[in-house]
Image 1 (cartoon, rainbow, N blue to C red):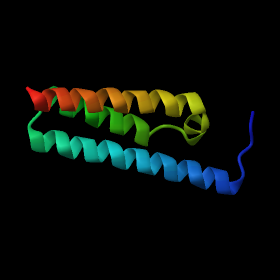
Image 2 (cartoon, rainbow, N blue to C red):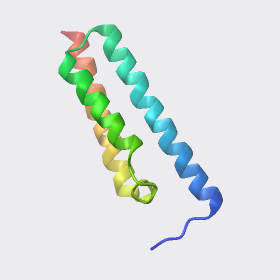
Image 3 (spheres, one colour):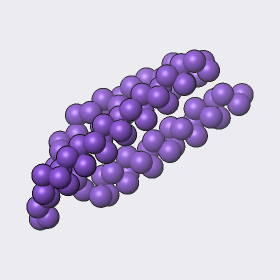
Length: 84
């Protein structure tokens, strides 16, 4: 198991905070453009899951990658809903 220095741990915490802010921004945009409530709920659940991830889980590159993929999928869903 890889041990992270204090500086690396702080960078990972900042990374997760920034990621949560991106989810919040997408949620706000989705609400403004009037997407379905089910998509808004999905964004809320995703944000909650990321906020409550164990710090050790966020350290795993694959967890960050999977969450990034999920954010991309949700972003596309918001764009598609807006285009309708």
